[in-house]
Length: 171
Image (cartoon, rainbow, N blue to C red; front, side, top):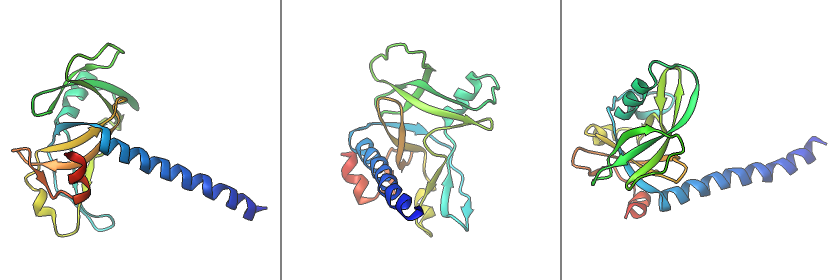
């Protein structure tokens, strides 16, 4: 009986995984681009490899607006994009219409910290010096505000350590 249950569940699980992969690929190809200013730190993890912990400046603005709230919360904010597509906080989403060059962004409040799509950027071991100049995270965002980090950028908005797959997706 367990063998049949396993055989029935395996294609379903594989299908769910493939749908999630396809959704992320669609977000990379069709999502709007935006930049979030960050303040990186450079911890290293023996279990996970090299990575950079990310803290976004907008998280501080949102946290201040929440006035010390520490509950678990998932919500959206509205951001305004400038000419370089850098995002700045406008308001919490209350179902109001978006103005020109505004987007929704999803965030989560967990343990008193605001989290966007990710709070870490993993890179190949030994290549950390490429990312030391990171000032912005380049994201793709869909209409629901779901974010996907694709690159780190320097102060001149140049991609750092860009992969060939993502190079073609950003043009």
